[in-house]
Image 1 (cartoon, rainbow, N blue to C red):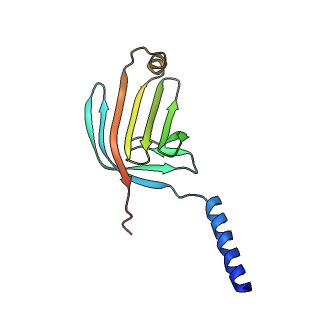
Image 2: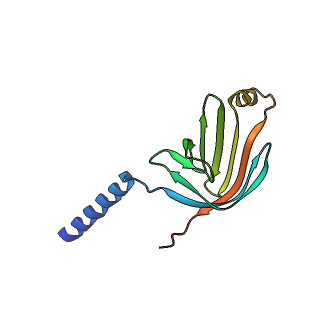
Image 3: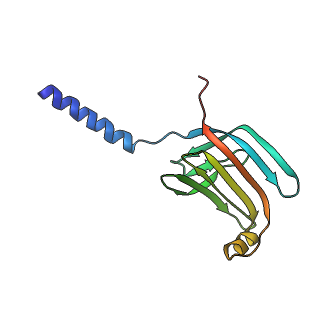
Length: 134
């Protein structure tokens, strides 16, 4: 009986530790398209995206990392508002669907009140967990 209590105690300790321990970044492989308003589209083929919950960031394909703004059971939202450029996007945690748009901050404000706006760039794609080579 003493041995069983020790094993149960060890198991509980490991379970508690694993919920507190840091999560590793999640690497995804994505395909889709990136369209620039004045330059046309570019295919996204087997490009990486990285979700890092500990750092609070999402690095979409072909773009630098952006802050995660919201996480729920089915999606991760990310974006950044700078003085001149606004970037927003999301990743569906179930289907892997990825979307992102980039526009001027002034256009984002127009969009927020129901007025028309111009995108500078937009991305749509599908992501899946990457498989490590070794």
